[in-house]
Image (cartoon, rainbow, N blue to C red):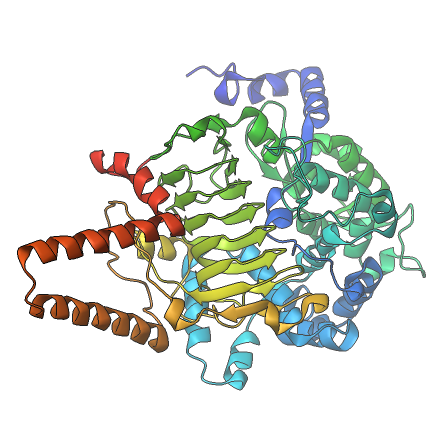
Length: 584
């Protein structure tokens, strides 16, 4: 083995650098200058609630909450914040509703809890609680990293409405505002997906976020920093929640604190070995100088992502559809799949490409889309008259500005904004979030399955209990009228069959159906049996049976056309010739 090159044959070897101090100094300087930092996608995409935050989550109040938590470290506030202490701070100090306090606490835990077995253990503990008091006792065992949680709360400012920007026309976008057909340089108003917005947010709020993480003695009487303020190593580690990066041409993605601790970077970011802390002004300057566009974000996915192969694309409409997927650079970095302008098509996929992916479905009309793999998050926006059947979603499904869509999914969280006439068939351990601008929303129990469904649920840590599909939470007070939603009447409820062959053990809907819905299906099946028996006992002649059959088939055909199911059946015909229909 040659010792004349580093990993991958790039750069001088450690042996050479030790023999040549001048070369070592030059290499270290080059390494320091080649650090790139960017805003992480996950906290903004899956962590920022897509609604304006409460006024009491403004930076001024968060600084007070930070000081309060640090001063009560012995009471379970720092370095980890227990649920009872956060409930006290949120409800007693920040004047938040108890449900909203739990929403932020649980949303943060869901974002940072990647271990499916631990998720399943919590689901089992929660489902076993027979009263609100028992549930509260279980919640009291939970805690989160205090500094990271404060940053998570700060990130909710991403959706703060600026009066100045609204006067300039940059805020309050209309749900029906036209945007480019394929969301390239712009995310069409969706800040959660727009990596340029994430970068701008960090640039605009970096000093505020650093001050939020400072120890009390590093702040002035006005709760602001000075030129001599020091940022602790634990604070920089917490900031890794929002920032990551790489060095040189390496594709390895590393958290902020690891890059900041590289010796070549110390002269630039002001790290002191003795104090084990960073100079705030120099650290801020270093981060700003290294901050660049996210090479793993949506913009990069659209520019350099590869086109996906699908199990089904028919009727020639695929010329309009635009579907891209980012490369899986590192196991811990979720890939992205972006779909736009799917029109009158049936698309189906179940493959490793989708596993753990963030999926954005944009401007899809009159289509049937099946993504039958475990997913990280899904955003559906500006879609119309379409059906979406999704594999289990580990974090959140957000539906925005959609008309007449059906969504069938097992997910950790569902949220919706500016939707009209949409129906959601869900199994979820959290309350569905109804944000602003919704009309005629229907909720129904999850009612379908595919062979790998329960295996996929286990992969993302989702169980059948608890299930809060029928207990939505009205988050935005301006839309607090419970008339915006209903529970689908059992008389309108039908099961849904996923028409694809796959390997697997799931043969029925996980968790079953609520009794009233199961009874409605039983009664409907009984009516069919009564009809069949009546036909059989009617003593019809052969000619009469043919005429009756023709009449029934004509009526069935009319129903297929009127409901749009004719299009789906026609699009599935080519798939009958394939051996495995959903493999892509």
